[in-house]
Length: 319
Ligand SMILES: [Zn+2]
Image (cartoon, rainbow, N blue to C red; front, side, top):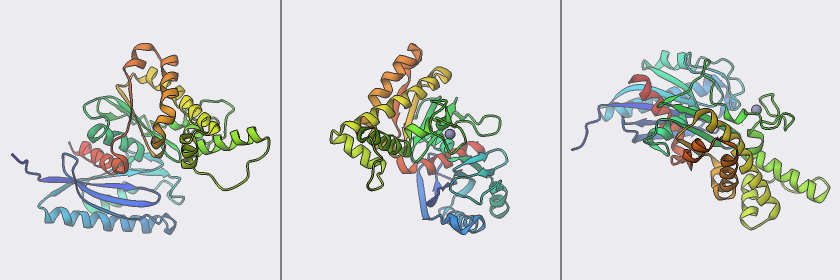
């Protein structure tokens, strides 16, 4: 028997490059989707105006399908105060300082709006419809340009006192390590992100040749490619990256004893190059029982994590 869907939510994935909106069913099925360039440089008021237009058009689509929009969920990058729905600051949106996004949207849309940090939302999305289905506690690490994180405990995002928990990428690995954009030194992000991998590769090349590496700007994909072809320096860089990530994950396992750790983001493409040293490090450093039980798996949602996560946040808010 086919279930009759009478409600839907609108999900927003507010990225630095793309502004995605979608209409989703209670089961997480994407019914409509729309994407446009974010053009963050135009300033916050224009971006918000275009976002409102897109949400309105999703609302129209819902009406045409006979669906009622229960809520709008927004996943946004940066420091988000979820409760108040304020974007405190965001690396992709330089002029968004303490922007009351929830208030701005709710005034125009007449539906409940929930704002969540994008990595937290993605974690809930993976737990709902992706690699964390059927489990209650998991941690998501997003390895992209930076390292994002989201902690799900008993089916809920662990928000922390200020809605700012889950910043796993800024766990200190080296007290005097590489300076990080957060103001700290030696953060996990500086070693396990795409940017960190490229930096490690450059440093290794310099050590090897005894001089500054010259030539074109390398990307993390170039490093994976070199490693797959058997380049010793690139292989070492990826093994070391797995080791660094394993040290961070061992601490997460000891603290949270999660059922699963899900790894997403572009670096996931290099999975086979870092997973073994990662696992070895976890087994050496974490307590044996939780270390053996925690499954470390790649994400399943890929590009849709943001949209599905924002929808999960919206559904939880109106349950
Ligand atoms: Zn940091």
